[in-house]
Amino acid sequence: MAERALRMHIGSYSLPSPWAAAPDGHGAGIVLAELDRADGSLTLLDARHDDDPAYILSDRNAGILWTTSEVEHGGELVGYRVASDGVLGEASRVETGVDAPCHVHVDLSHGIAITAHYQGRRFCVISLADGMPEHVLQVIDPPQWPAGVDRRAARPRPHSSLSVGDLVVAADCGRDALLLYAIDRAAETPLRLVDSLALPEGTGPRHLAFDGERKLIFVSNQNRAGISVVFIDEAARRLELRQIIASPGLGRGDSLPSEIALHPELDLVYIANRRDESISSFEIVSDAGELAPRASVDVHGAWPRHFRITPEADFLLVANQNSDQVVSFSIDGDGGLEWTGRSLDVATPTMIRYW
Image (cartoon, rainbow, N blue to C red; front, side, top):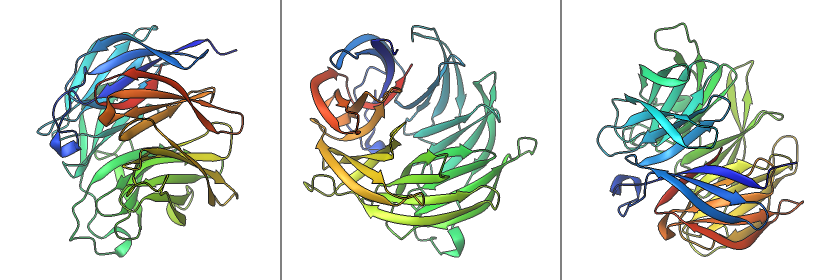
């Protein structure tokens, strides 16, 4: 039986960051909070200042929380030792050498972290020692000709990555491409490009969610609001586009999608729609990954930059960046969302991770 209380860390923009669409950033840093599963209420417990810890990642088994410091000039990958109650302890910092890291993916099995730099236009590979950042191994410039398509006129905008076995999938939002790298930890430069997928111009792939059973990657399309469904063939080291479907949300504005996630038990995909201020759900209706729209709900705030489903799939929390709040929704047995009426005041929140 799940415990009644669930702790979480919440990232934020603590400094004004026009580059990151946060000109009014005024967050406390990394906030420790708690969700009461009885009613969806949220309580603030602690805060640890850091410069623009906009993206956070954690592993309770390792006892570590990682964050990118998304400052406009420079930038760091930071690793915190974390106590069992979620309080942050000692930190280890590594300068990435590239401006404004906006995302980090950690692959403990290969001993690396990969940072994406939307404004800095590159990916960085950083070695880990006992899970903590050690030093930069590789700096990657995204290709100008993904899948043989000329995208030289577009600026690269690296936004995110994830690992699938010995492969890494990376999203270049600016050149509308997904990049596939093979990992060779023994090599001097551990990532090697083995395939690329050019999405339609103007798509803007942002974040990635992986369905391990179907070997599918669901991609939030930031610029042409929607979801791309991509099959990954691990043996052949190839990416294949299966579907692109629109995500207009509630139809109240030109949607600008952000986070995307899978329901842990049901065949559902959720996506956040900024500007439209909504969360939409889509049903996976075939093993090929075909999606069909299901429902959209108001987020009761502004600019839903991120959301997170609880491990037991009973709540979904939304980080509404521009209304300075984290809002809770209950999730019913069919995956439907219902606003609890509960929220927590958090300045310019950007990211939620359960501990």
